[in-house]
Amino acid sequence: MKKIITAVAVLFSVILCSCGAAPDAETLLSVLKDPYEAETAISDKDSVYTATVLFDSNALLFKLSAPELLCGVSYGFDKENSYIVYNGQSIPFEADGADDTVSGGVLVWKKLLSANKEYTARRSADQYVVTDGKTEYRFDKETKLPLYIKSGNITITFTNFKVKNDKTP
Image (cartoon, rainbow, N blue to C red; front, side, top):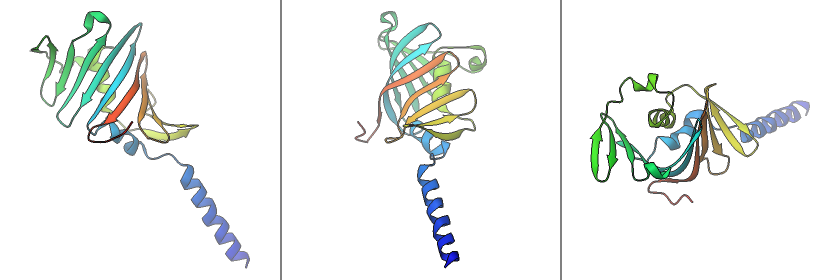
C-alpha cells in the first residue's frame, strides 16, 4: 500500500512540475522564424522609432513611420541583399561586416529579430523569458507571442504581432 501511495505521489508531482514549466527556448523563438507582420516601437539609445516589420521566408522589411523625417523609408534584407526603399526607389547597401561595427540601428534590430544563439527559457509570472545572458525576449504566457526584445540600450516592443496566414489577434 505504501508503494502505491508513493508511486501516485511521485506521478502527481511530475505532472504538476511539467505543467508549470516554460516551453523550451527554440519553441518560443520559432514564432520569429515563421512569416509574420508586426507593429513595433523601437527605443534605440535616446531615439524612438515606430515601424511595421514584415517577415516572410525570404526577406525581412522594416517600414519606418516615425520619426516623421524617416516616414516612408524602408530597410529590407533578403538572403543575399540589403537595401533601402524610398519613394519607389530601391538602393542596395553593403551590410556585410557592419553588424560588428554598428552599435545601434536597423542592422542591430535585424540581428535581434534573427535570434541565432543558444538561449534558455524560464517562466516569470504571466510571461516566458528567453535569454542568452545579454539579450532578453519576453513572450505572453497564454498566446506565446513576443512582447518585447531588450538588448543593452535597444528595446523592440511589439504593439501588434500577427502570424501570417493566421487569425492571431
